[in-house]
Length: 453
Image 1 (cartoon, rainbow, N blue to C red):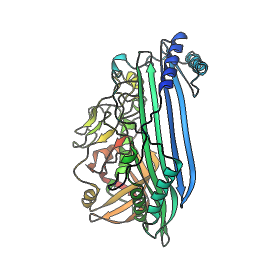
Image 2 (tube, rainbow, N blue to C red):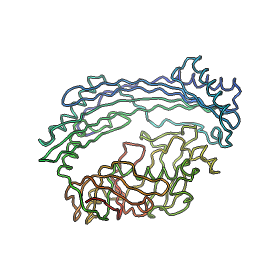
Image 3 (tube, rainbow, N blue to C red):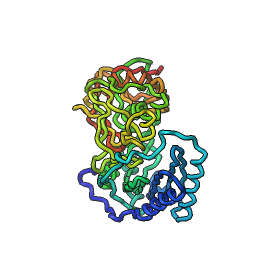
Image 4 (cartoon, helix red, strand yellow):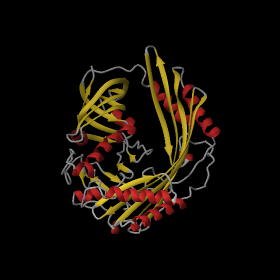
């Protein structure tokens, strides 16, 4: 939260997970009754408010409240799953019956089954992830209006708005299985976002910004979000294409995490056992420069990607995935681990606070180190070949000359191969973006092809 801003009123009222626990316990009992050799169930409840304004007027109000139950049963090496949004005993029983019926028609697979009992979380810890905020529509509207007004009043060239929004969401989940594991988690997420349009001469551009946090009082102020949105839009005015060339490229922190996402996809169990990864059989090999460390921090207090157990109940723990640039481990759930004849890494459901250690320089210092290059601020399209690592994405951003921002750029393509991109990382900035499950600063890569005019 910005200095000088008054705290926003919050509530300590918590979602009740009692009904979720009852539904999971009943589902497991019914699975046993129907002869299943093993079973697992996950029940969830989420609720929230999203308010959108545009050009000073309330545009939409969305209240959400969702709940559901997913049941998976195992008959030896056969499995079946079914789901319901009704927690009544009759509905849960029908759902279990449906899962059992499906299991009869599935193929046997020796890798099916629950996570190994010894890997389950023994004492899940409270990671300070739940801080519910339940604003009235008027309160949320006023914050959104403040945000949009700040953006529109920043500069006369900001002449239109795609709107501003304020959202507040919270949820809880209970997971249990027939090994006797029963775990629950509660999480909250609040956000403020804005998108505006600017014009100068024949040039018209748009951009956006947002703030997100577990606690509402950790959000950037509505004014700060609006002003940053406007300034990001203004810096894009007068954008042009550049001649095709090969130059250093800086990925701005909010999109630099996409490089880590491609890396994680390549070392995830599903891609590996299907032999559909450009990093197949690379365990123990040098993937990045030796200064790069990429690791998980699942037990960080209050962080966006924290969890004390994964979606199978397996305990999470801090671990290095890349150390000194060398690949130390894969990203596996129980099924993919068995397919690969390995052990689960506690990543059923994804990674937890994936972090690439920052260097000592911020984005401004990284720019000063580039004589001629490209700062990417937006990526478009999904030109990624997971088998070969070939990489080609539309991009816009800012051109760098003599260590300074020179002019905005649009309608170009950034191309290369992910293996080369990873090896050619020169520096990681200390401007870490903590709004998502991946924690990453800006990344400077030496030598990518910019396809332009």
